[in-house]
Amino acid sequence: MQNYWFPAKRYGWGWGPPHTWQGWLVLVIFVALLVLGAVILVGHQTAYFVVYAIILCGGLVLICYVTGEPPSWRWRKK
Image (cartoon, rainbow, N blue to C red):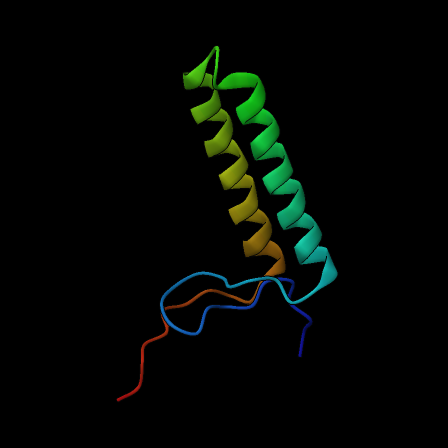
């Protein structure tokens, strides 16, 4: 069994909270960069911030896809 940074969610599609320190580090860096971008860009260039946030989110999804458990739809069992 591999040690995934981001495990798959129990229900739905995607990843849950990180299980390793590397995953937490990625998440902390993501939030720090998002806040820094908000402080610098929102007051002057809101459109640039939106593009910046989309790029950051895409990077986070890519990291989750590469280092996380393979995503698939998980449904609640009746």
